[in-house]
Figure 1 (cartoon, rainbow, N blue to C red):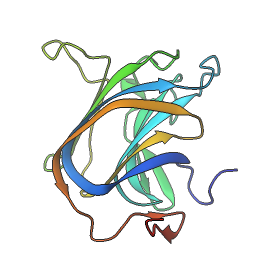
Figure 2 (figure 1 turned 90 degrees about the vertical axis):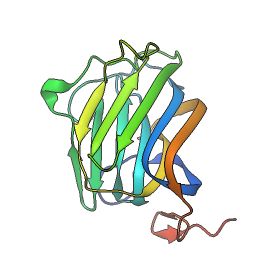
Figure 3 (figure 1 turned 180 degrees about the horizontal axis):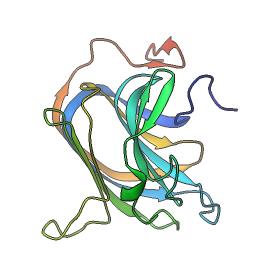
Length: 176
């Protein structure tokens, strides 16, 4: 069953020690369920303030609607920031590990995602949008409603200790 309210990622782990503003995140991502079902996915959540205020990168075997896009969850609404005309070909169509890099510049609002871009000189963003709605927030890794694995995770950038732990499902994490 889905959580109540706006449709949003359901299964993810929050990196609790720090909130991030401007940062780069590099990792490897793999789908853990049969990718023959085209809607399988992995998500990278960032600028997470609470359960219904954050951005997420949705990497999927589809490239339509809310699949394969950068999305902003803003209370009761979910907005796809990646224009349909700019949707790339789906790459999450197998169980292979894919290198994913997320670059976020909070001052300019630029958000870039690179997938399987191993050569920095020739790399082109898989997604690129500009949005300044959120600044500080937690980073989380997971899936909308599937299973995905993440490895070799590196986060660098502007970080701070949170004033309070992240809330989940309307409650506050108590450290247990």
